[in-house]
Length: 589
Image (cartoon, rainbow, N blue to C red; front, side, top):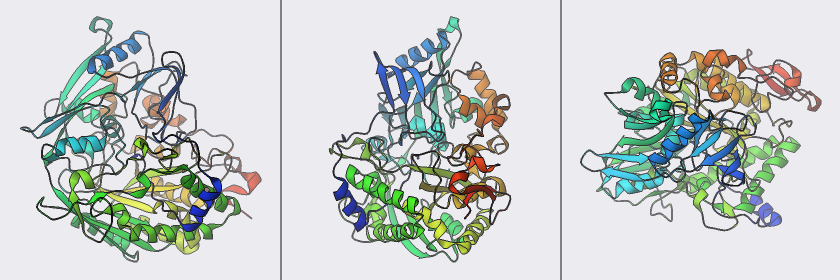
């Protein structure tokens, strides 16, 4: 969310001590379901994302959930919804979207259509394609096609995503070579279940083929789920290859130029930037022949199962630092994390067990993506963000900045560091700013419109919506610099509500997308308030921000009055320090 979500943290000695003090929690291993129901027959249901709350914290309710296992059952579910005038949304097993993407409209009367059990894979070796049912997740897909000597070139970093979720949000890997890193560019065919007339049985399947049905297919490649339910996706494959990965840590003094060079020199490269520490970690990552020696595996530690007590202790240390206003503690944690990741190969192992040095060479299906924590069988363990225990709870922003604007943005962030270096330590516990390379789309109406860098910016979020964050103003100023100064485009599956404040003006093909939406689902069975707002359906963008006391703390609004912050705690609505047009919640002594 990402994906999912790309969280990056490493435990220090003090965290381990705290975990002993807290003790083990009675938590099952396998992650909780995205939909939980209290009524008979999967009725009276609530939907959750991977952290337990969507970005606006609003309840996500539906009258029922259905779990189709075949296309025929998907059609039946959609037909029943249309016949009875019910709002519907597809939801994956993991539900890794940050905004309220998967919530049906209808004030609790709608239907979740879960792809959890719809997950067969058919590989066609002759055409080098694979046809995936909507619920197929990344690692099973890669491992299955690998058995046939084939692979897929680009993957989001978190392996828990489903293929339909990826196409719903435009998820991607990193790279501008060839077709680029977005999964939607490799779609050959999509079968989509859409509303239909009573004479047609209230639902029908349309088969969209690249080169033939592009007018509709280019909307379905990145659909936000508003066109119908994806049934199957056919992706083009490549012969198996290996990758050679190395990481280099150095000063960020020349990062303004080095990020673009990294993109030009590495097919799968990326950059992790720690502004407060004035460090950058450059990933060198390229294809090598399958004959190259190496059995490397991507075992990124935060995506593996961890003891519940440990992740709760990690969160407790964050809560303590926040409550005491101790930015120095966050700086110490960030430095420890950087050192730990460096010493462990940033989660890559040379043989599936140990990291023994760079380069790490391994097959694509073992190197491209990582994540097993939500399927663990270990008791009292799970993902660091598992909502059943009080672990990670964070904001995850994702914005794409063009290569032409990137140097100026970096200089603005460095200017914030110069004013107060500790203020950016709030990013250190989550691997700073992860920069992945993305390419201008050749197909998707809502895809990337320029070559650039997608930046994941993850930081602490309070479980209390009335509690401000340490140096809240700095992350808010960065968010507004991206949005309004550099016209950054938000990742559709990430971000706070205000991250989508400008989407209606960013996509030149938005009208073409809306035309397809109106053609396939004219009554809006698959739309909700959030999708209407970000797509500006009938002027709904004006309703995106919800102005109310404390609204800026969760990013539901950009403050215009002190009451939108937390004035009783000293947080007032103030101009930005570097970008003075920004309006941010800053603690004023």
